[in-house]
View 1 (cartoon, rainbow, N blue to C red):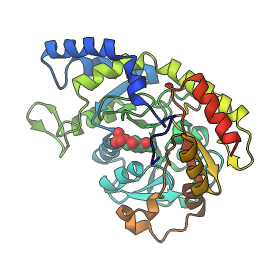
View 2: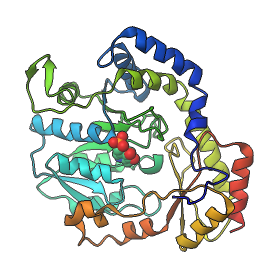
View 3: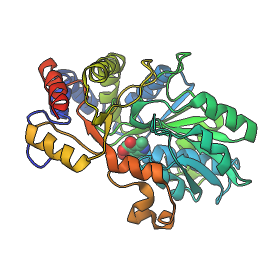
Length: 372
Ligand SMILES: Cc1ncc(COP(=O)(O)O)c(C=O)c1O
């Protein structure tokens, strides 16, 4: 987004990843020696370790976060728990991938406004959108903060709905009973896109669930619908986590808890030290329910503010500049009136928050925002 190279980049992935170079070189050498590139021991080990991290019985490595969600939905369709054309409730301001996964599965996305305070699905609005066709509530834990899962669980229970969460931005977020994202509903999807809190070195994703039947079908669907070589039970796709990404992810997973802690510490500083009436800071209750994948502020005059960040050398991004229902790719939703979503997309700016930031850079960011 920034036009000139900022003195404080939004995210310096090379710097963050450089602390792993030695271990990854050794892992790469093991990978070469193994002669196994797909469906080998590293994927199995990662799946086992990530399931343990999330507290779920199963983890299935897949190609990316979009596929993870699509495979869950398709899995439930194959199991007859949902039917093509059924409705899925989703936050209108989520990343487009969440909505695309619903479309790809032949289901109907029902876009619901978010809660202005948390940017997550507004649980007070869900029930008015429930029809005979509604089968799933699909909350995203946007920017790294858990959606209100207790409320969503209560609604789902009352209306006999499935809950599938998009946890692409929330690896390691915990509720007040210490349940971790990925283990808060029927099934969850993760993305390990390089910039995520747990980021691979290419595309990668995973599904977590406690449902043995769903786990089996998701694994099969991601492998051409096959559990036994050359026997195809479903019209599946090719979406498998590869051995190298799995091995690299295993290395980074060791630090995820500490990294999330550090992210929360930086967020705490921003929240207590940025004091500027023009800048609306994000809501956080101070618990571990937020892993600050992004630190998103709101500002009425975004154009002017971004210009200021350019001039002062602070990197920034906008998550996201165009609401999904205004994207050309989702034309069928263009007539929807979603004023909260639209206003959020006009006002949000993500400022740097990552584990590569030095103390003096954090101070510089705070000072620059206070001087705006
Ligand atoms: C909320 C959300 N959902 C889904 C995705 C899709 O993940 P991927 O890019 O790995 O397909 C992403 C990440 O890009 C995301 O942020």
